[in-house]
Image 1 (cartoon, helix red, strand yellow):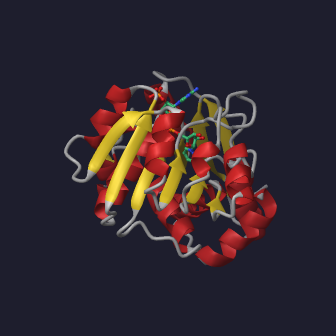
Image 2: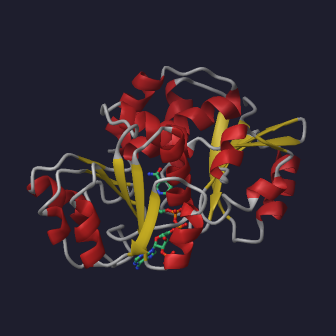
Length: 276
Ligand code: NAP
């Protein structure tokens, strides 16, 4: 039997992850000698997993919550983007050396570009101030967005992300504040889990969408259309979910794991048909 080179994804929770399906599909369609497994790894157990990965010959793994920041201290080499975005979602292992990358942000920017959306010159309204929101604020700065507003339940966390970023302001995540800032926004990005399948929490009021012409991006991909996106669409606004980001970050990660070059657009179309 052919020896398969193991690849993985780690997280907690991990059962919901689409990464095994995504990578499994690339492996099958291209008849490549890899296997892909999901591991439920708790916060604090990242270093143990790394030892296991080295022993098992794992050549690369994706990381999701809660490992993206911990990995910055645990890999041997932190690639430039991962350092800038302070987040590692992709690790390549060669000869026992771990290199950490961030393909999340490039994945997001590529999925936006595929829909002709640029951050340059835009007024962004970011809902949430977790790991991904932090990376997006840095990306907005790099891409010359005009202004960024971060609304978060915990104001301190938003202020921490904004610190040192020009043209950035923060406020509490309330319907009043969303309504106020949405009017001036070109792009509203939901970086909270509100509306996600299985969590039973959602925005209480969508009237903030009444007086805006913004494009609405929800990083959630399950369900494919959250209440936020449905309500935005009903008001004639352009919408996008998080599937494109997931797909493009996965394609880039697969290339880093395997050194196989993929046609990104063709892969994205195949994967969208499968996962969408
Ligand atoms: P995170 O670090 O855990 O941050 C979550 C954020 O949501 C925090 O700002 C938190 O506020 C806020 N939040 C959580 N529960 C809330 C509630 N009930 N009401 C109001 N705010 C709430 O998460 P993350 O890693 O940044 O991920 C954020 C979102 O992006 C998630 O939905 C995740 O699934 C999605 N995501 C998508 C992709 C993709 O490929 N499409 C990739 C990564 C993440 P506090 O600061 O007050 O706690």
